[in-house]
Image 1 (cartoon, rainbow, N blue to C red):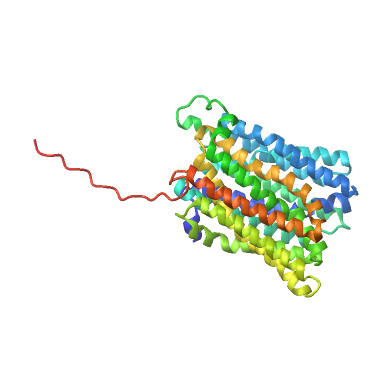
Image 2: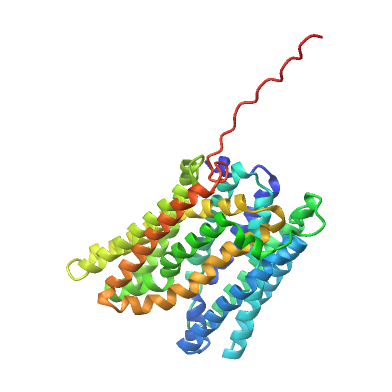
Length: 427
């Protein structure tokens, strides 16, 4: 299955290696930023939260500009400097000692990360054909989670809140891992140039983001993504953890086990899922994702109902919720970017990918803000009902998208056997 999921072009395979290496560095630091800013550097919880929120706001604000620059100058000229900026910013976190320096460093990191994901997706899409793109994006997501898992386990054995040097080491290592994909891209001089040039177009298509927003199928896909991520991904960091600890009343360590179960599910199931959904309707797969996410939240809600009767069963519900959610991610991760790039034109591919990545930024602002008040109502049941209902609504939106797509865009294209050339009749 791994051999089948690998892209045909060697350049794309090397880029996937860069994804794995940078993800290991991301995993080293991802779980510890809030703890580092508060317990090690002495920022208050409120100021640390503002610093992290500022990063998200700046990234979201700059993402449209990143997409425009990718289309105008090529992804290579945007991703390379962004990787270098990200490395400098991440390494500088080791030197943060005040709120002002934390805001400054997180601004640098946000500038770097604003175009990396959309740029890398654009490059990967340009190196793959539509028939393999879904498999490659799924493999890319699996490698991302594998790297984060490896990095998280490594840093968990290193960091110590009583020793500043342990945190400085992981941030410096994270900076180095951002340089590795940059070096890989430098060894591929023919990769990542402006796609319009390949088609003999001197300038990008007129209209920019207005043209993208006029694309009715893509607009429907964006609506689906906003609803699903707001009631899905955006609830994991705040809603899931808060409900598990406050309503289900499990130990925070159980939450850590649940997140580990999520990673294990993705790594183990991704290749199998890629194989099973190949040649099937992409919109139906997206509808199934909404149903799976809804099922995960229902399992978590069941844990809240029985927490007072069986602590073990409640803890299992928390872990099972995260694992089921991970299974849904294995379907979403290959299909969403594949469908985005099936709808995109070469001249606007950067903008399409930038807007797709902005979905997570917008939902990342809405989700945490709404989770707290909803969990505080009716012992969390209002929150459970809201996220379950939202995921099911997203499934309906995905099903309505089917009639707006061609057979090829929906992933159902079949290759007909070539017909023999007709023999000309004798004169």
